[in-house]
Structure formats: structure tokens, C-alpha cells
Amino acid sequence: MWHDYDSDPSGGCGLPVTPWMIAGEPPQLMIRVFDHGVFVAEPEGQWQGTRGLEYHPGMQRYLARDEFAARGQETVAEMLKRRQRTLRYCRFCRHPTPPELRFEKDVCMGCASEWYGVVY
Ligand SMILES: [Zn+2]
Image (cartoon, rainbow, N blue to C red; front, side):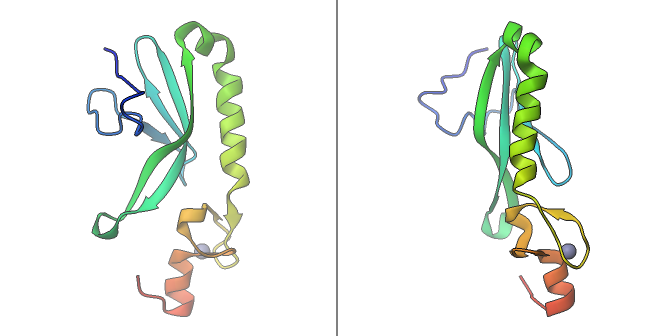
């Protein structure tokens, strides 16, 4: 199965056949597996009104099957490092918090509700 990525800049998010899988808590990596290779991407959280927080593939890289065998681990490690650099510890709960879940630079949204009474 081939997907025309040039005509679909979303990376085929809506295609149900081979969905993006999200790994990590908070999400740290997205991966999408095809017969011919693998896409790995940094997750980007976006708040979508009533649908809540949704993750979309941000910066992504494609590795053909043989490239993935040779350099998959290294590529995944690089992506994880980039994503982990965006995490900040919440000053209240000490959880590593990605930008999309932060109320302030060092306060997560959950703690903002609990300690500041913020209602979303
Ligand atoms: Zn917190």
C-alpha cells in the first residue's frame, strides 16, 4: 500500500489502515509502520476545542526497511532526545511536562487547576 505524501501534507493522519502509534507518557514518539519502511515523528500536541488534546506527527523522518534495520535505533534515540528537551518538570507534581500540557513554564495544567483553581 502506497500513500501519496506529497498531496497529503498531514502525512496521512486520517488513513485508518496504518495509523500512527504513540509511545511514551507523556507522548514522546510517533511511529508508523509500512511494508516498505517506517515513519518516525515527534508528537505535537494540539488542543482541538471539545475534542480535547490530539497528537499529530511533527518533524518526521522516513526510513526504508533496510535503513531502519541499520539506523533505526539511532534515529529513534535522536528523536527522543529532541522531544525530551522540550519537557519541563512541574514545580508542584514534579512530572516531566510537555509544552502542550503546561499552564506556565514550570506548572502543568493539572496542578494549575488544583493549586490556582484554573478551570479549562
Ligand atoms: Zn503538575
